[in-house]
Amino acid sequence: MQRTPEPPTFRPSQEASEYHAMDHSEVNRKFVDDLLTGPVGPRVIDLGCGPAAIPIELCQRVSSVEMIAIDAEVEMLEIAKREIDAAGLLDRIALHHADACQMQVYENEMTDTVISNSLLHHLEHPEQGLATALRLIKKGGRLFVRDLARPATDTDVENLVALYCGEESENAQQLFRQSLHAALTLEEIRSIAGGLGIHAGDVQMTSDRHWTIDWSGKD
Image (cartoon, rainbow, N blue to C red; front, side, top):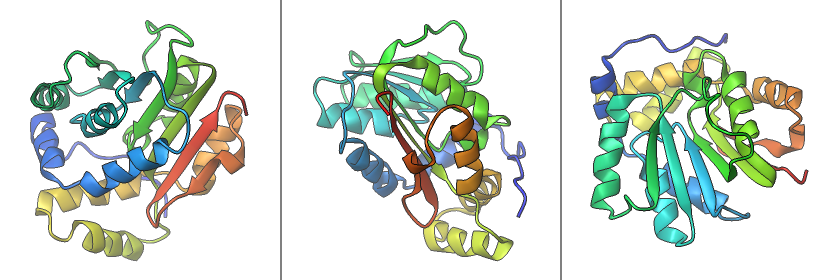
């Protein structure tokens, strides 16, 4: 099945609201659990932070972490600000509006850790987003990126939608369906990562629908 970039199905405000209403708590918790199996921070950048659920959980679990949470959608950042404020973390999580593929004003090697969850499949040129992430990391720092893996067939897509999104709204199911169609396969992300100096062994399938890059600048 060929990759199909996500069409602009919903208004940004509607898409942000639909995404925020979906239950990602288990996926977000697993992301932070797996991230914390290695060194993190103290300075962390999250590319494509969405409603900031992962930055909030990470800061709640690691008191030394300070974050810059970046998203290209103003509507998503508005939701994120409310969530961060409610969590009492405005002093530790700074929100920035930026496109992950156009961040030239951000300095090289400015952070210890870059994380990203389910951003690359949204990008027309995911290799640019991954290159940005690597550029921002200090020598010896860590990159932790997780995203959806594109299934082999339409039937596989529909099975995953039913399994993981069957209780959500029809709009939410459509968002998930489009994301699966826009996702990269393990082979595709390994090829992109390899071109940027990341070993294939640092890119692994970590669930029935996710691959993960866990790379250190020491590798």
